[in-house]
Image 1 (spheres, rainbow over the protein chains, first blue to last red):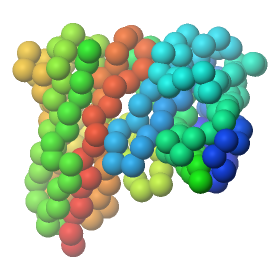
Image 2 (cartoon, each protein chain N blue to C red):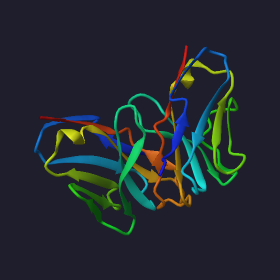
Image 3 (cartoon, rainbow over the protein chains, first blue to last red):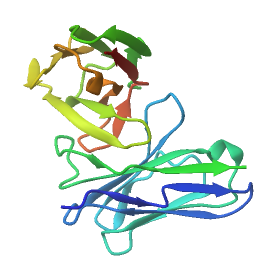
Image 4 (cartoon, each protein chain N blue to C red):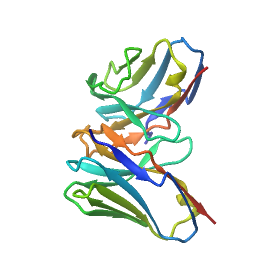
Length: 115
Length: 112
Protein backbone atom coordinates (compact mmCIF):
# COMPACT_ATOMS: atom_id res chain seq x y z
CA UNK A 1 0.00 0.00 0.00
CA UNK A 2 0.96 3.65 -0.30
CA UNK A 3 3.18 5.21 2.29
CA UNK A 4 3.13 8.76 3.64
CA UNK A 5 3.13 11.23 0.76
CA UNK A 6 4.38 14.80 1.02
CA UNK A 7 4.01 17.50 -1.59
CA UNK A 8 5.78 19.37 -2.97
CA UNK A 9 9.11 17.60 -2.60
CA UNK A 10 10.91 20.91 -3.02
CA UNK A 11 9.71 24.45 -2.49
CA UNK A 12 11.68 27.64 -3.11
CA UNK A 13 10.08 30.86 -1.94
CA UNK A 14 11.06 34.42 -1.30
CA UNK A 15 11.38 35.88 2.17
CA UNK A 16 8.05 37.19 3.36
CA UNK A 17 5.90 34.87 1.25
CA UNK A 18 3.29 32.38 2.47
CA UNK A 19 3.75 28.63 1.89
CA UNK A 20 1.67 25.52 2.40
CA UNK A 21 3.12 22.03 2.76
CA UNK A 22 0.87 19.01 2.36
CA UNK A 23 0.96 15.57 3.97
CA UNK A 24 -1.12 12.53 2.99
CA UNK A 25 -0.78 9.94 5.77
CA UNK A 26 -1.28 6.21 5.49
CA UNK A 27 -4.97 5.41 5.28
CA UNK A 28 -6.44 4.56 8.68
CA UNK A 29 -3.66 6.17 10.69
CA UNK A 30 -5.21 8.38 13.34
CA UNK A 31 -2.01 10.10 14.47
CA UNK A 32 -0.06 12.55 12.33
CA UNK A 33 3.15 14.37 13.21
CA UNK A 34 5.13 17.22 11.69
CA UNK A 35 8.87 17.49 12.26
CA UNK A 36 11.49 19.90 10.96
CA UNK A 37 15.06 18.82 10.14
CA UNK A 38 17.95 21.18 9.60
CA UNK A 39 21.12 20.07 7.85
CA UNK A 40 23.21 17.75 9.98
CA UNK A 41 20.63 17.60 12.76
CA UNK A 42 17.97 15.16 13.88
CA UNK A 43 14.31 16.00 13.30
CA UNK A 44 12.65 18.37 15.76
CA UNK A 45 9.01 17.95 16.73
CA UNK A 46 6.56 20.62 15.61
CA UNK A 47 2.99 19.40 16.10
CA UNK A 48 0.96 16.21 16.62
CA UNK A 49 -2.63 15.52 15.54
CA UNK A 50 -4.87 12.82 16.92
CA UNK A 51 -7.75 12.72 14.47
CA UNK A 52 -8.74 16.25 13.54
CA UNK A 53 -7.45 17.96 16.64
CA UNK A 54 -3.97 19.18 17.48
CA UNK A 55 -3.06 17.16 20.57
CA UNK A 56 0.28 18.89 21.05
CA UNK A 57 1.53 21.98 19.20
CA UNK A 58 4.32 22.81 21.64
CA UNK A 59 7.00 22.51 18.99
CA UNK A 60 5.70 25.24 16.68
CA UNK A 61 8.41 27.93 16.86
CA UNK A 62 6.10 30.97 16.70
CA UNK A 63 2.70 32.13 15.50
CA UNK A 64 3.81 32.25 11.86
CA UNK A 65 3.44 28.47 11.85
CA UNK A 66 0.05 26.81 11.78
CA UNK A 67 -1.19 23.34 10.82
CA UNK A 68 -4.60 21.85 10.15
CA UNK A 69 -6.11 18.42 9.59
CA UNK A 70 -9.77 19.19 8.99
CA UNK A 71 -11.01 15.71 8.07
CA UNK A 72 -8.61 13.64 10.10
CA UNK A 73 -6.54 12.53 7.13
CA UNK A 74 -4.61 15.05 5.00
CA UNK A 75 -2.73 17.74 6.90
CA UNK A 76 -1.38 21.09 5.76
CA UNK A 77 1.45 22.97 7.45
CA UNK A 78 1.19 26.68 6.79
CA UNK A 79 3.99 29.18 7.22
CA UNK A 80 3.31 32.91 6.99
CA UNK A 81 5.85 35.65 6.28
CA UNK A 82 8.61 33.13 5.68
CA UNK A 83 12.12 33.90 6.92
CA UNK A 84 15.45 32.50 5.74
CA UNK A 85 15.74 30.65 9.04
CA UNK A 86 12.66 28.62 8.09
CA UNK A 87 14.72 26.83 5.43
CA UNK A 88 14.79 23.14 6.35
CA UNK A 89 13.29 19.79 5.45
CA UNK A 90 9.78 19.41 6.82
CA UNK A 91 8.93 15.79 7.58
CA UNK A 92 5.51 14.30 8.15
CA UNK A 93 4.88 10.98 9.88
CA UNK A 94 1.80 8.97 10.72
CA UNK A 95 1.05 6.08 13.05
CA UNK A 96 -1.92 3.86 13.62
CA UNK A 97 -2.65 4.74 17.21
CA UNK A 98 -0.43 7.60 18.34
CA UNK A 99 1.06 5.69 21.25
CA UNK A 100 4.83 5.66 21.60
CA UNK A 101 5.14 1.99 20.64
CA UNK A 102 3.06 2.43 17.48
CA UNK A 103 5.55 2.55 14.59
CA UNK A 104 6.01 5.90 12.90
CA UNK A 105 5.98 5.96 9.11
CA UNK A 106 7.74 8.97 7.63
CA UNK A 107 7.30 10.68 4.29
CA UNK A 108 10.28 11.80 2.20
CA UNK A 109 9.83 15.38 3.33
CA UNK A 110 9.48 18.78 1.71
CA UNK A 111 12.71 20.71 1.32
CA UNK A 112 11.86 24.38 1.88
CA UNK A 113 14.31 27.05 0.78
CA UNK A 114 13.60 30.67 1.62
CA UNK A 115 15.68 33.10 -0.44
CA UNK B 1 14.62 18.22 29.86
CA UNK B 2 15.51 15.10 27.90
CA UNK B 3 18.55 15.37 25.64
CA UNK B 4 19.74 12.72 23.20
CA UNK B 5 23.33 12.63 21.94
CA UNK B 6 25.01 10.51 19.30
CA UNK B 7 28.75 10.25 18.95
CA UNK B 8 30.52 10.17 16.55
CA UNK B 9 28.79 12.37 14.01
CA UNK B 10 30.40 10.41 11.19
CA UNK B 11 32.05 7.02 10.80
CA UNK B 12 33.80 5.35 7.89
CA UNK B 13 34.61 1.62 7.90
CA UNK B 14 35.71 -1.00 5.37
CA UNK B 15 33.15 -3.51 4.16
CA UNK B 16 32.77 -6.58 6.37
CA UNK B 17 33.63 -4.84 9.62
CA UNK B 18 31.41 -5.13 12.68
CA UNK B 19 30.59 -1.75 14.18
CA UNK B 20 28.79 -0.07 17.07
CA UNK B 21 26.89 3.20 17.03
CA UNK B 22 26.29 4.97 20.31
CA UNK B 23 23.33 6.88 21.70
CA UNK B 24 23.01 8.48 25.13
CA UNK B 25 20.07 10.15 26.85
CA UNK B 26 19.89 12.25 30.00
CA UNK B 27 16.56 11.16 31.54
CA UNK B 28 16.29 7.42 32.17
CA UNK B 29 12.47 7.53 32.54
CA UNK B 30 11.74 6.52 28.96
CA UNK B 31 8.93 4.48 27.42
CA UNK B 32 11.16 3.05 24.74
CA UNK B 33 14.07 3.87 22.47
CA UNK B 34 14.00 3.69 18.70
CA UNK B 35 16.66 3.48 16.02
CA UNK B 36 15.98 4.88 12.56
CA UNK B 37 17.84 4.90 9.26
CA UNK B 38 17.79 7.88 6.90
CA UNK B 39 19.07 7.75 3.33
CA UNK B 40 20.01 11.05 1.61
CA UNK B 41 16.94 13.02 0.56
CA UNK B 42 14.61 10.50 2.15
CA UNK B 43 12.48 10.18 5.23
CA UNK B 44 13.24 7.98 8.20
CA UNK B 45 12.79 4.23 8.28
CA UNK B 46 12.26 2.54 11.63
CA UNK B 47 14.84 -0.18 12.32
CA UNK B 48 14.31 -1.30 15.89
CA UNK B 49 12.19 -0.30 18.88
CA UNK B 50 13.28 -1.40 22.35
CA UNK B 51 10.69 -1.18 25.10
CA UNK B 52 11.89 0.21 28.43
CA UNK B 53 11.53 -3.25 29.99
CA UNK B 54 13.74 -4.88 27.35
CA UNK B 55 17.52 -5.10 27.18
CA UNK B 56 17.90 -5.69 23.47
CA UNK B 57 16.21 -6.24 20.12
CA UNK B 58 17.53 -7.98 17.03
CA UNK B 59 16.64 -7.75 13.37
CA UNK B 60 18.87 -9.55 10.90
CA UNK B 61 22.39 -8.14 11.17
CA UNK B 62 21.24 -5.39 13.55
CA UNK B 63 21.19 -5.65 17.33
CA UNK B 64 20.17 -2.77 19.58
CA UNK B 65 20.79 -2.76 23.31
CA UNK B 66 19.37 -0.56 26.03
CA UNK B 67 20.79 0.28 29.44
CA UNK B 68 18.35 2.68 31.07
CA UNK B 69 20.32 3.11 34.27
CA UNK B 70 23.33 4.45 32.42
CA UNK B 71 21.27 6.29 29.81
CA UNK B 72 22.80 4.46 26.87
CA UNK B 73 21.86 2.48 23.82
CA UNK B 74 24.03 0.90 21.17
CA UNK B 75 23.25 -0.26 17.65
CA UNK B 76 25.49 -3.12 16.57
CA UNK B 77 25.81 -3.81 12.85
CA UNK B 78 27.41 -7.10 11.93
CA UNK B 79 29.35 -7.72 8.72
CA UNK B 80 28.74 -4.22 7.34
CA UNK B 81 27.92 -3.77 3.66
CA UNK B 82 28.09 -0.71 1.38
CA UNK B 83 24.28 -0.73 1.36
CA UNK B 84 24.38 0.04 5.08
CA UNK B 85 25.74 3.51 4.29
CA UNK B 86 23.22 5.99 5.66
CA UNK B 87 22.55 8.22 8.68
CA UNK B 88 21.42 6.39 11.79
CA UNK B 89 19.31 8.24 14.34
CA UNK B 90 18.17 7.24 17.79
CA UNK B 91 15.13 8.76 19.49
CA UNK B 92 13.12 8.56 22.70
CA UNK B 93 9.52 9.64 23.23
CA UNK B 94 8.98 12.68 25.44
CA UNK B 95 5.55 11.27 26.37
CA UNK B 96 3.58 8.12 25.53
CA UNK B 97 3.10 9.33 21.96
CA UNK B 98 5.12 9.55 18.78
CA UNK B 99 6.51 12.91 19.88
CA UNK B 100 10.16 11.92 19.70
CA UNK B 101 13.38 13.58 20.76
CA UNK B 102 16.10 12.70 18.27
CA UNK B 103 19.85 12.62 18.47
CA UNK B 104 21.89 14.38 15.80
CA UNK B 105 22.58 11.14 13.98
CA UNK B 106 25.70 9.23 12.97
CA UNK B 107 26.48 9.19 9.25
CA UNK B 108 27.97 5.85 8.33
CA UNK B 109 29.98 5.14 5.21
CA UNK B 110 30.89 1.55 4.43
CA UNK B 111 33.62 1.38 1.79
CA UNK B 112 33.75 -1.56 -0.65
